[in-house]
Image (tube, rainbow, N blue to C red; front, top):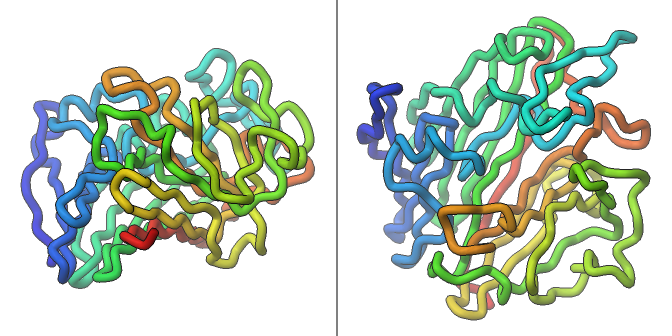
Length: 320
């Protein structure tokens, strides 16, 4: 069942919030501003960080629950090569570009409409963000009776461009947002990660996780945090597969992240303010940071007239 209610501000007086409720009474809410996941509630327990008002989302610097793009993560020097030329963008994090720049998916007002009984499709056209091409983007959120939040990104452009989206929901499976996620048990299906420099941009080739704090091949506690790193996930990119799992001993809730994207940015919320320190973590299925300037990674290119689709699923259960 889908219900639509106002979620407006003075800047966006027509903005709405959609709630998708399954047969168990559990629900997911998504707002049109930033096509953001604003709430996930399972067995009466809220599982992701959120704000109460539209104005708070408009002031948010942390991409809470947002659809992120058109290029997720960081691009060094706010520039990259495309078709033999250099595309130069306006930096928004020092000399670099973060999550698409100042004009991006997370700050846009999308148009949402139901797509069946358990899904809502949000649409956006963006062409003033500095990237080549007029991009017609869509993201469809579905919520099943099995507690699976499906996220389908679609992109189409009139020129060769970049389409590299992700979702930026902060999870706390305990349901107690006053406590850190340090006790959560995490497993990441990855043999290698990308070391980063002081600007949080990969500094070289992928490195083995073995013998490092980045080895989550066997489930273990997050611990004190400090993670904002990309993991090269096992399996074939382009196929839907399990990238990572998290479990809260306090609540018994388990989250499984599946995606057809190449890797996972694991972020433990170390830079959050306005919330308790490290009170949420992100499993961001995506291409590698600065991938457009790397020679050894698949590129998230969208060719003129073509359509690209990426799918991610967050499955929530009480399985221990």
